[in-house]
Image: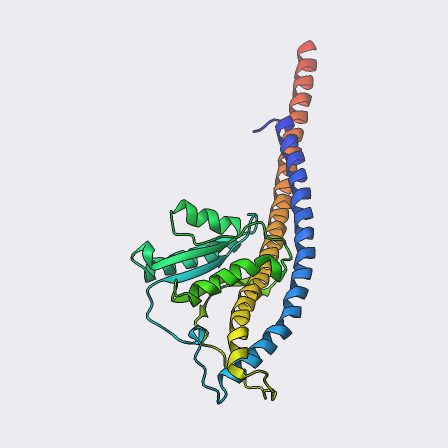
Length: 286
């Protein structure tokens, strides 16, 4: 059995660890609350721009835009959203496992795909496996603004417009609740899901014309989809880290209880041993 000093040292260090994980849990809970607000505030914009684009694309105007047309697939692009830090449970491993499996299933050569990682964990994962990385972005804020990812979103859309890639997928963790996140793998380009959600669409007047407006809106719409996935992924990251830190805090509590029990037993055994020795010594003197 470990000595009393060793057990007490472990109890002290575990209590300090518990203080850290509890603080990280509270910080993540605060960040999650703000991330949820950002996500909810972004939805009305997304719904409106989708409605306008769907109204034009489904109208009588003859739409001839490459972003709406499928073409033979020679190369595929993957945007993968992860975090810059760990301590978030299975947040990173789940999305990386899915995208890696899909790449292995779909492609036989590295010439057939390229990856755009968002987050240090994803960047390191693909770099370690010598997978082709088109561009990357790391060090994003916990509550990112659209300006933070505007360049990489525009670059990804431009890769498709220039026919460098023929389709674009995005992988991220979709926020369901504070304890549930689902990995999503969605085809971003070509834009094929522009149907309105069954609601009555507003009537619009267009100036100069519908086709010109559509050519401007489509890239912005694709970029907003990337940003929407990013803030959704950030909310999932904060939720996953909060849950992981709560689990770590609970485990620390359980470990402290077990160590305290072991300490009391060892202390009781030591006291019993001392009493036995005193009684034995006194009996020897008689």
